Length: 252
Image (tube, helix red, strand yellow):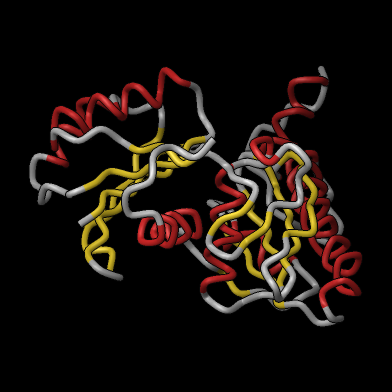
């Protein structure tokens, strides 16, 4: 068994992989007492042979999770760093390590699952978009604020935009709360649709579109393109990497 760790901007997600199956899963926001929560939960889990993690957070949080894994399982995490090429996927970045490892592992999952050629959109703190060709070549992508971060940026930069309640997405909003929510969510949807149109000629004209991230379910109905929602793409890609690199040290 392998314990897989996905240290994202908003939360820590993890799963225990046995063969090709996730037998145990969990997630905690970073506002939780991570050390205590992990110690309590992992005390009930089987001991894995390996711990493999992917992180887009700071070293302090990586260390906290590593200490918890060491205490619970006497295992030191192996951290996957973004490579130039792995698991059939070739990184488009001239400086490969600057592509978020979460984005790379989502590409690995898509390629391994046979979804390429495709566009991958992840909607969370950031909205990331990537194009993946049928042969595993990553063609590049875009990064923008996620819809909730957009709303926070408006609130932080203005004095009079102060909604008194959470807004809803409307075609034509008649109040500030709905106007702010509608503008930010529709802007995100429009960006995804535009990226698909721009990438389509290099992807054979009709790429599949997958949507992941914590806000995928909310964004999907606003899109013009048909999408497949793929939860846990980073953990799935990490599982592919872990099976492929049984004894490898940290990558880059």
